[in-house]
Length: 307
View 1: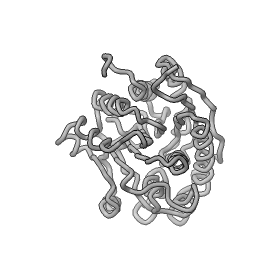
View 2: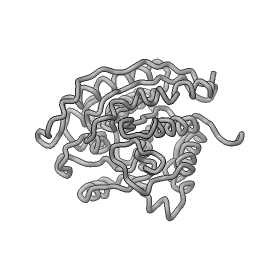
View 3: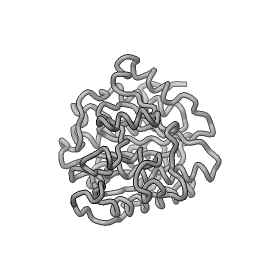
View 4: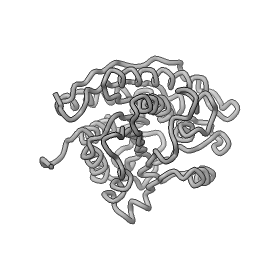
């Protein structure tokens, strides 16, 4: 049994309801086949796989009033929110196996509620090629997987911005984004207006990944719950081809490992999303296996024993 990490609960959320490509619904099984649970058990972590949440099928319909599949997105996220909160209340660390990134609304809303109830601070580390700060006014696709950070910060339909109660789940200053390299023109304006803390690839190139992660994690203390939302398209597509929205120029293997190891060093990881893995376009589950490798590093795997 690990003395450093709480027991973990794996929550499968097999839907691509918010995405522009089919296939992310198969992500949870790909991660299981790649041995995620067994890898964590081997690291001394108590792992419970609670199986998959069920929700509405993907109707694959056109946007209505600027949003695709809004009611289905709400239903899936509400179910995930309730499952995530239940695991937190049971003293366990929820790991969401997605599914597309719209699902972060459910997981992070639950974590936010939990932190408020416990009187703890929350920091969200968003590892992604995209800022996901769109609204229906600035994106023509209506795909909600491009909107979760905006919705969590109160920009979007009330059904999503107030998923967990009377107020948005996050304030912009609680979010740090790393690896960003694809932002829509009007989305850039919103990010600047709301002062989202974004460490894009230019920042990483100029400052190095170590200084980037140090800046993103600055100020964490023992009263801070760290939630990591890991979109697999954060990684360069040369090493992680199994995603629906590849963007060249992302972190390489060693940079990604450094990110995860530095997060592990804080000892503050409290919850995790793994999203946007699309086995349909992967190469022999390579991307899922890489994701498992990186999650092992989040749980303390390193080359040497370090103080």
